[in-house]
Amino acid sequence: MDPRATTTARVAGRHLAPRPGTDGILALGLLHLMKTWGRIRPTAPAHGLSDVLWHADAYPPARVAHECGIPETDLMTLARAYADARTPLILTGRGPEQHTHGTDTVQAWLNLAFLTGHVGKQGGGFGTLTGQGNGQGGREHGQKNDQLPGARSLRDPRHRAQMAAHWNVLESHLPQPGYSAQELLNACGESGEGGIDALIVLGSNPVVSAAGAGQVTEKLRALKHLIVIDFLPSETAQLATLVLPGSMWCEEEGTTTNLEGRVQRRRRAMTAPGAAREDWRILCDLAHAIGRPHGFTYPTFRDLQDDFFLATRGGKADYSGLSAERLDRSSAQWPVPRADGPDTPLAYAPTYPTPDGLATLHVPRLPTPDLAPRALHLTTGRLGNQYQSGTQTRRNPALKAENTVQIHPDTALAYGLRAGQSVTLRTAHGQATLPVTLTPGIRPDTLFMPFHWPDTANLLTDPTALDPHSRMPGFKITPVTLLPAPAAAHTTDARAEPREEPSAAPRPLRPTPTT
Image 1 (cartoon, rainbow, N blue to C red):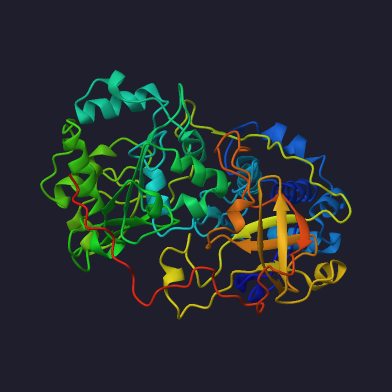
Image 2: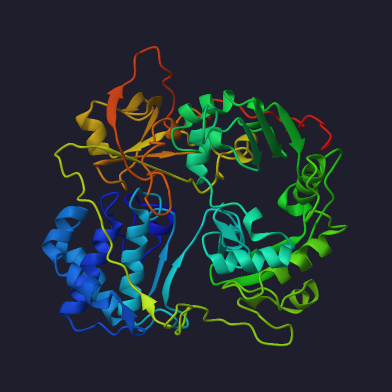
């Protein structure tokens, strides 16, 4: 299910192309049909079950097909396939999440899997893929600023007390949850309470990847100090007052956790060159430099990793029974609370870590989609031969460049556009001009732009409208106006090279010492 025919869609048995932003409505339509056909078999007793089923009554097939912009026959085919499958797996990418109602969309799909009895079952249920190799592991252990190791929360007094005891600090010294990533960037350069005048960016390139990239760039320019830790000179690093040469994934030890919670050991393949250092060492050095060495005194990575495993003890994502030696023998699925005990393949099977052991279902609140005739919406995403903000892949001339806007041929015809012609896309947040690629596999009401290049996709996305729960911007749907570019604008082949020609060899980062 995707508004455009991706590589995955082209090898699928069927491709369903719902209107951007309607994934949750599609899930509600499926739940409606499962209830109608008597296929509701909850995984376990749960709070909110009757409310969720009652809410789905308002989403009959005709309404869902109309709002999703799909044939009703295709909806019924999908529903029958799901109803008849023994172990159906709902697997999502970032598409359902990256909306201002993304949390509710994901909840709608979780409800469907739970109420049809496929959560906590080997081979079935619900899973989501992230855009990075260890995104799962990072989210379990403190990557976000409301998290603590072991999938603990900074908001939970019990979790705060556990970690304060482990770190030998006062609980009151632990911070409260801070800004989300987008809110952090929005606060940069702002004066007064809540404003930020210094920022450390580690291995990220928000000048390209953040929503409202034009506004974000100006906010980063307004900072008193911008410190970037990276191994290539990204667009963000070019704005930095200080660049510290960090390390690549192959220059550090660690673990990687995949979709099913399987932890694997990752070994260092090479040593960081020149003045570059492992990221964890740089962070420890910074802590010492500002006079806060407590908790940052690890002689080796093994000491750091052992402390991390121990810190997760008692958390939902418990790694405390793991060690480098155990992971040398085989991978393991968390929770692993004992060194001599088994791992736990079905972490989300009943009972649940709630006061009464029951799951809690939530009614998803989803907006009505824009059904205005001739309305166009922009969706952004990835290309298979590029990676993230392109800091690495745009430097490789062997990778084919595809910095274009994908448009359905019928839409291009309606606007008098042809392949390779430059077009200007304008939203309430900015505009960008780039060549057209005619793409029969995309919806006629949808335009697609990859976000791997600067000065394109994220100039157009909204940095202020955020999901009320996850605080995620709406990368996947932005109302857009399509304008033929002025004659002076670049007009190239439909497969255009990136604006910034990659150099033959990477430029080294400035050899700045870490302290």
